[in-house]
Every structure is written in C-alpha cells, then in structure tokens.
Length: 308
Image 1 (cartoon, helix red, strand yellow):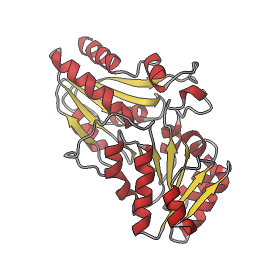
Image 2 (tube, rainbow, N blue to C red):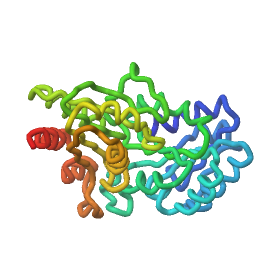
Image 3 (cartoon, rainbow, N blue to C red):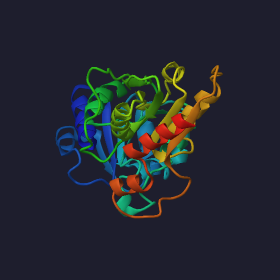
Image 4 (cartoon, rainbow, N blue to C red):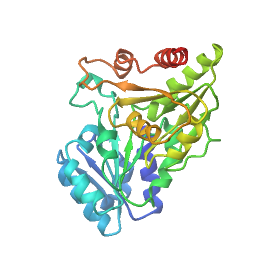
C-alpha cells in the first residue's frame, strides 16, 4: 500500500506541476525517480515535523499541492498544533501521508504505534481522513485527493496487505462502500479491518447469520446516511478498527446511532484497542491477536449480541 501510494504521487506529479513531495527523515530509496526527474519539487527534510508542516502550508498558500510523508505517529502527534493552525484553519491543500497506521510498528513499541490518530484529527475542522483497506483501493483513492478542498490525512497500513476491495465498488471520498448485504447484523470497518470483517461475515453466513459489511475508508466526512440506511433493519451493529475505541470509527458510529431515533433499540459494540498503551512488543499480527481485532472475535461478538 505504501509503495502504491508513493508511486501514484510520482505519477500524478508528472502531469500536474502543482504537486510537491516532502519527506521527513525517510529512507534514501524513497521516490528516487521523483527526486531525479523533478528535483525542484522534491524536499527531504530532517526530523522537524512542525517545520515541515509550515513549509507545506506555505507552498499550499501559493497554489501548490504538497504531499507530506513520514511515520504516522510523527505526522500527527508531534506537529498537531501546526496541523490545526497552519493547515486546517486556512483549509489549505496539503496531503499528510502517515506510514504505519495502527499497530504496524509493533516491534518499536508505543512511541511508534499510532492508536489515536483518527480521534485527534477527526476533532479538527476542515480535516478529511482516509484509511484505505489495500493497494487497489489506494489506486482508486489517490487521483481524487489532488483537487479535494482542504487538508487530507491518508493512513497507510503495513504494505502487502491482502486485496479485499473490489473494482466494481467505486471509490468516492466521503462515501461508505457496501461490501456485503445482510439483514441480521451490520459490521462497520475502516482501513485494513475490512479483511477480517469479510472473513467474519462468511463464517457467520455458514452459521445462518447474514451480516452486511459497510466499509468506511473515509472517516471524515463520515457517510452517516449510508450507516443509517444499513443500520435500520438489523438489531446488532459492530464496528471494527485498528485504533483505540475512543474517538475513532466506533466513536463516530456511536454518535450517529445515538442521534438516529430508531423505532427499536440497537445492540452496538465497538471492537478496537482499549484505552491503554499497548503493553507488548511484537508484530502487527501478534498485537491484533492480543487485542482480539480478528475475524473470530467479530463472529463471537455478533453471535453473542444476537443471543441477548
């Protein structure tokens, strides 16, 4: 996914002279073709994210479209005030590309695990938040980011993630993508949790439970209408995210459901990381298993709620 994203920035820049690339202490191999062919639009800055955001904002105010890429923790936590004041307050066209969303950098511990990025950026006016599920969805997403008004945060996963999206489900910023129909339960996902959700829906179907799956690669602006349309019939709703359960997808969905005024109550559960820093080192897969962000847990939660 990361390579696809960076390659697309390069391809888009070749046909649009407004596009700049800014990296922050990244590997020497990052976008070498961009650097060689368009050096006047390629900047590799040091570990100075606040300054990088200011640089990007200045370029954007002059009509340029900078794509800024570094590790997700540093492009969100370390320069949060600059994101708010330099980017969002002025609604400039800067695209923040965050490497390793969620638990990707599990081997480096909580300093590099970005478990709250969606929550903190969702609270900022004018910010758009995108979390694609795989490289193919990234291909459909990136061209739409060029002329989108205002700043965008793009949350990248590990790379080489299984392809679970489909070309026949058109991508559109701000639109929820129905991936499977069903009237017994609704599973809501963002980013790479679409894969486990689809696996869970298949297993639930074998057990006689038909679950709809709504993929929400745009967390903000959230497609509230798509959520409400699919949530109207089933009595069980589950959100799944590689993020703290506070303020991310689950929090956003809870807000929508709480204000919906359904005729009958819904049984709703958020699956994600608890309100605590991850306390183990390991791999992304091992920590997802530890915190039960898995297809098996989705099946267990859905069946448990149905039986209530």
